[in-house]
Image (cartoon, rainbow, N blue to C red; front, side, top):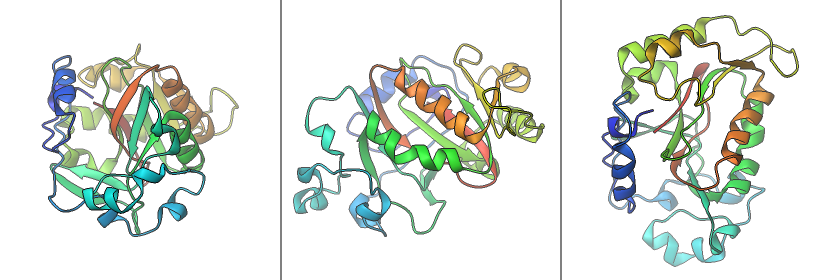
Length: 249
């Protein structure tokens, strides 16, 4: 969750923004991504954008032959104008120390979205995810990535052992009842006020959090995004596996 802990080797055009963000927090995750020359989202797509994102209207100039040659991700129609909230979604991809790891087959292609279109693209899947989730609200001022890591990948993604153990402890605990509806809870939500950084290992292990069913957990996450006036999220994925954590950098 700490930006300066992630040795991000992806050659992003906004790397200076990432470096500035990393100065604010101490190491908690060692997260790596890598650039692969000649491999862009158009080459990686195995299913069409219409199939993957049926509710999203694409900006035509972001989905033509020139964009394909550049290897840039298509954008939603709203990014044709000035937009204060942008997120790049790679639903089925996790980065493990510089390598792309596909978590579902076939993987859905990369796409860049405004906040409303991100909501449209991910809400139903988040609400229907059957596994356990520990989710940490991001710092609105500095977060640049928000991604899900399944428990078996904690070490591979670079979570420190003590952080992995603390999250695993919370995932193993009974979920209890949803604070909103009383149904079985599968999410444990931590506000930024409760846990500001994964460096707060004792808080990760002991803070009460809010227990929520998948539907209300998804709504809590998307409501947190709604409260953030401006964001440029370089990477977000969707949950996979049986249990894991949503963390931010």
